[in-house]
Image 1 (cartoon, helix red, strand yellow):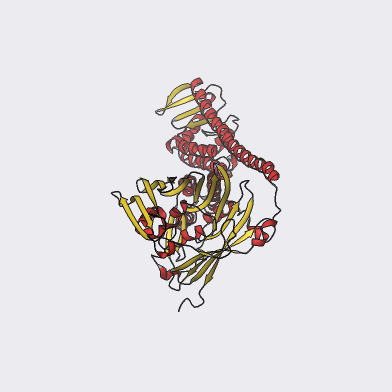
Image 2 (cartoon, one colour):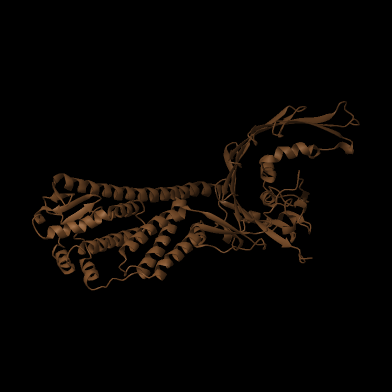
Length: 583
């Protein structure tokens, strides 16, 4: 429903722009055919432009916190996005909630939110169905008029004579209806000429299109205004064509004298429609006003601005830490360090506030020097621990593991991508668990599939000086794949008879779930970036993590929620730069 709301807001803004342009630039002119095409085109473009997305990238080397200019579409998107729920936590201290309070309050909040969304959805589509039923009823009413009418042939056209005389004159596609009482009167030719003009100009297509838009997108008031303008323009265009075959004053007098029909069908063109005074004024008092070429050319300017603002998203090719270290280190050489700090929301966490969780150090050339963890859940390290990596990770991936909350086996996918089994096989010495007096020997055997991905890694560690004969430690890791994606990972410790199985699930090439013996992780993404993580233990939710980014896509904050959905603490990211980056 959120995406549909975003579409509706863009649709309304677009229609407002086109409607205002029409009233200011074109309405008072007599080029009715041009005005007709403008109105129909405006409806069509306003409906489809919000569905079109064009990404434009401009090369520019700027700071990681630079912000490219926003389009109207992006401003609308920002305005309806949920506000970051706990920005104010840095300026206030949250009141702790007891376990009982969490259990009683949270379900009610979720129930209200869910019911509100369901109610809005059902209300919208319920009213849309009512409008659609109304349209079908009008079509059926016209069909009934045709069934009860007698038919005559006039100038090669079949004319339906309404025996009830409720309709002065009306037309829908090739069907023309005229009141039977005018059959032998002079007014018959005038009414016929007018309705024949509607049929000739195919006005019923415009009417049906506007009715469908009003039915499906009834909440947009500009569709109703456009429908009214389309109907009026149809009558003006038909009046001009019909008056060419009749005296203008006599035609105007006939138009005025017959403007008394109370029966009206929305889907049909009517001779005796509203705005009679305006129509007669246009015929008698206003000289023909042709739209100038300048005004016509302005429509291309309007279209260009509309497409640019609503369909094009401008992205600067910003050189920032999202760029791979290994791919382009020069672009991030000004970053000296990135730190993460703990900010608790409860009184019993105040003693940990502002404490470092982890800190990444970078050399002047942009390469990663080391990453130290000062805290890890439950954030009680006494001394920092240096993190070890198979290969230097991309910064966007490194930021995901600096929160102090482990991802367990899923961390490999987050740090190194879907190729992580290759790194394990290429650097087996990083798998050793300990080295007894630096006298251990290591051996690693790897089997691969036809794509070069390891399917089995057997690792042994032995120490001949250890008192126990044949002492050593060995384990085996196996990998199953779906294509090039790991679907199952198994860790088997031979001498301890320990077997650990983890199963992976994906959406496209992005990991969305990891399930192990006791812990499970679920991952959600927004615009290609990791936005939410849920951790479960034995199918019970333990914590939820939500990730926030700046306009350049750099992660700047993590919010951690407890099992009851209440905010527990914030992980804030801080960036430090070399003072003389140019040197």
